[in-house]
Length: 277
Image (cartoon, rainbow, N blue to C red; front, side, top):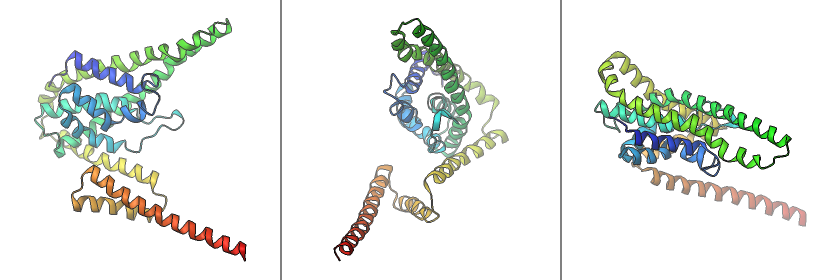
C-alpha cells in the first residue's frame, strides 16, 4: 500500500494540530484528545479511506499508552508520532502482508510499531520545546526595547512555525517514504521468519504493560483488583460491547455512590442526635 503525498500531508497537518495548544484550544482537545490513538484513528481512517481498519490497528496502541500522562512536562512518549506515524505505517504494513486488521498478527504488529515510534514523538516534543525557546529569547529582547506587540507573535504564530517544522514536515515525510518502503519490507521480512514471529510475540505482550501501568495508577488497595477483574469477566462472559460495558459500569458506580451517601447521611444524623442530647 502506498500513501500519497496528499494523504501524508493531511496526516502531518493532523499531527501539527494535535500538538498545538493554540490551534486545538489547549491540551484538552489537542494532547488529551486528538493525540490519543483511538481518537486519532478516526481521522487517520478518513484520510486513508478505511476507518474500521485503522481503528482496529489503533486498539493495541491505545492500550499500551492508556495510562500515559505528562506530569510537569515530562514525556515518556509523545503520542503524536504513535497516532499519526504508527497507525498509518502499521496499517500499510498489515495491508501489504495481507493481514486482517482485527487478526492477532496485525494487532501484535501494531503494538510493536506503536512502541517503536513512541520515541520519535519524544524527540518531537522536546524538539518543539527547544525551538520555542528561540521565540522566547526573541520576545524578551523585543520587550527590553519596549515593543510589547511581540507578545502576540510569541504566543500565537511563532509556535505554529515550530509545529510545522517539528511535526508536520517530519510526519509527512516519514509516512510517505515509510509506506513506500513497505513493499520492500514484505520481501525482506517474510511472515514465517523467526524475527517476524519475535516481533509479533513482543507486540502481543506490550498491551499487558499498558494495563499494568493503569492498574498501578488506579489500584490503591488489593481489594480494588476484585472489581477490575469482575468487570473484565462480566464483559467477556456477556459479550458486551464497549458502550454496553460503560453503561454497566456506570450503574455499578451509581450504586456504590448511593451506598456511600447513605453511610455519610447516617453518620451525620447520628452526630446531630448526639449534639441534641
